[in-house]
Length: 110
Image (cartoon, rainbow, N blue to C red; front, side, top):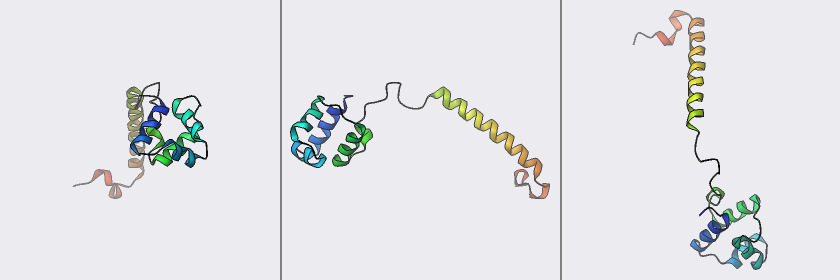
């Protein structure tokens, strides 16, 4: 179930809203709304947001999954973590060398 129109129809039925009610809320005719649900009329992103607001759900629940995959690219994530660790290690060494010994919290006797 990837079609936005199908997801809208299912959510409308779950909420027990009629097509007439949805059309009235959107300021369009019932037949125009019916065409949206049947996929005969393209739905703009703004219209998806408006419909989601009426249905009291997140607009992202109506959107299809991304074509390029869902989630975080693992390789990109690992490289980013590596770079952040390297960056912080470098900056901590700089800070440690600039702080007098009695104030240096990194060399605690605890």
